[in-house]
Image (cartoon, rainbow, N blue to C red; front, side, top):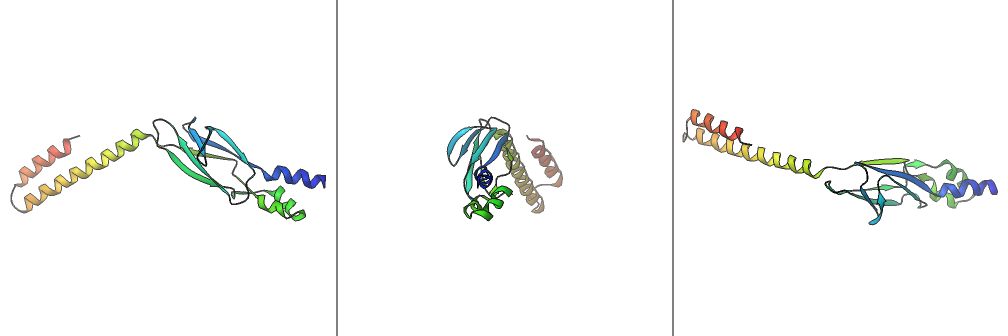
Length: 153
C-alpha cells in the first residue's frame, strides 16, 4: 500500500515551465496574474482540463493562448490506476516546457503601413493605366507619373 501511495500522490501533480521571448513578460493564468516569465506552473487538475494563458509586455502585442493537461502520458498514474480507479483522472501531464514568442508592436504597425502604402500606389497606377487606355493621357505622361508614384515613400 505504501508503494502505491508513493506512486499515486506525486503522479497527481504536473508542472510546466512557461517562457517567453523576450523574457519577463507579465503572465496571467485564467485571468489571474501569477508573475513574470519564466514561470513554473504546477497543479493537480484532471486530464483534459485547460488553462488560459495571457502574456503582456510593454512594446509588444498581448499574446493569448491556452494549454491542456493532455500532452504527455504519466506512467506512474497509469500503473496506479490499475490498483485504484481514481488515478486514471491524472494519467496525462503537461509538456515539460513551452515558449511563446511575442510580436513587437512597431514591426506589426510598420508592416500594416507598408501594405496600405503599396495598395494605394497600386490603385493610383491602375487609374493611370485606365487614363492611357481611354486616350486621356499619353504613354510618356503615364511613365512620368508612374515614376513619381513609385519614388514616393
